[in-house]
Image (cartoon, rainbow, N blue to C red; front, side, top):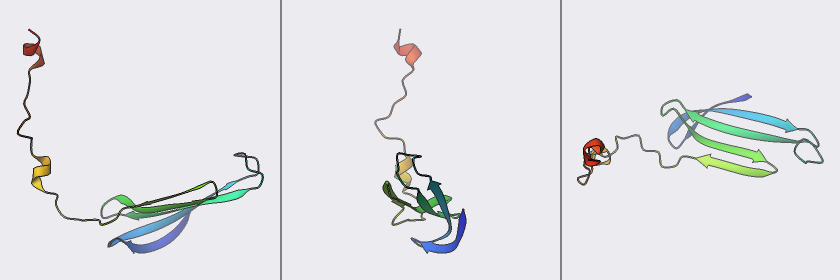
Length: 94
């Protein structure tokens, strides 16, 4: 694993790591050996991976958070819906 230092991604200071895995010839049906690498950028502020990219000749994957908002979400997202009701299952079964 290699330390990539710090970088700002989507306004968040992130720390980067690069990992590499060598696949020997014949290990996954491959005729020649190859190296697959992944770069990951983590934000301690939001405790999440903000960006990750894999460089692999078999497939490639990129993951990224975009338009990160660090504000409180609207309170109505956590309000009990007006149509919500509690049903006492023991009483309802009688």
